[in-house]
Image (tube, rainbow, N blue to C red; front, side):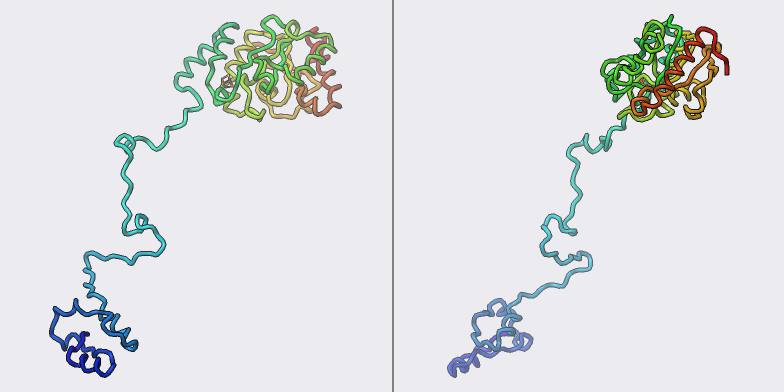
Length: 310
Ligand code: SF4
């Protein structure tokens, strides 16, 4: 709509606002831009003035749809404005998202390493152990734990795995359970390092003293088998279920295995084996100490050739 100038002059003289006419009737497109919103003070015409003052909006073309902006959403995050971020550098665009974790074992070079373990002498075996990375425990250990004692000890005791104290000192059975074992051996007249050599199935401490995993026992038994072959014990004492399982190949509970003499195969040799509780279990079950004492007496009688065979 546009103002009719002549009538507006008349209405203005009468104190009435200007008259508005439809733009189609007007036929003067050049005046559209000059239509002043404030030219009509009559409140009853405000809506008409507002509509007339809105500039014409061209209809959107089908090829360029533009969604209405969403209030409150930053301009750069609007869906119609999103542009995928460019890579920070050319190398970043081609770099793998994350480096693959290191494998738990060193295959295939493990085969050569373990082959050397299988034929090493006592000193070389200890040196190889310090370098072993054949299972994941190498990443969490502080020290490898080799043995207390050496070839020539007639009795060999086998435990499960190092604990926190052993991990720090690099020696087996040096914590509270180790002190209890030393006392128990002394009670039957046996001395660590002379009469008895002590080793573990695993040579590295499992985190939080968890149970050894089958794959860890499987690879670490290269060290265990070589140690037993070199120690050539006359009697074996297996402390706890993991040790009995690794050497005798049985999952029976200690309560069934203890009290008799079993047969273990070491480098083609049959060796008498006695099963007893692990010292750490005895620390929690003091009433079982007496059974351990009887088991050690059985080992001593077996060494003397007086114990009945299972
Ligand atoms: S637990 Fe045995 S196999 Fe595993 S890293 Fe230690 S020495 Fe090697």
